[in-house]
Length: 225
Image (cartoon, rainbow, N blue to C red):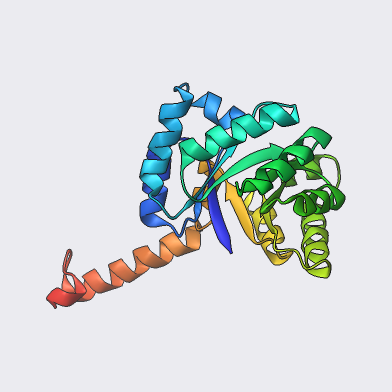
């Protein structure tokens, strides 16, 4: 299982990389635009925070295959090793995926709403396929079922493509796609913090400290007793 940060907030990325088991960062034009920073320096800054190993997914904006390929090459050069060019699953996008695959440039297929879109993208060479879970559920479609179908299709056809579930509004959605077999999820800043949050955990920690301090005194650490 892989956890990605769906963010271009460098302060959040740096802190999350320090504390959590994070495998990389995903971005898209909307996420980048929110930061109000120049694109190239921002991507370089994110890569510097991540270091060499974690993955960095950066999306193209072009809509025609030749232009997508040019952007994809530029993104790969900018984002460095273990980077992925995000491309929406359109006819032009699929053509670009095939061409980038020939150049050994990693691709993440995005804006996915059906298992067939995912299968087409996987066959075109995508390493990851990103279904939009909350947007699916806003259409009264079971996002976890879509993920499960995608995973099953990849298994049946012996494809190494991974499901990278995206677009979440609550922890329950994340939990359900994990149970459905998603290989990875990408989660925004506010929701990411909630993945481990629970009031009973906080109250348990407070009780441990209270009981300890009652017996040994306030501020006394275990190793000091």
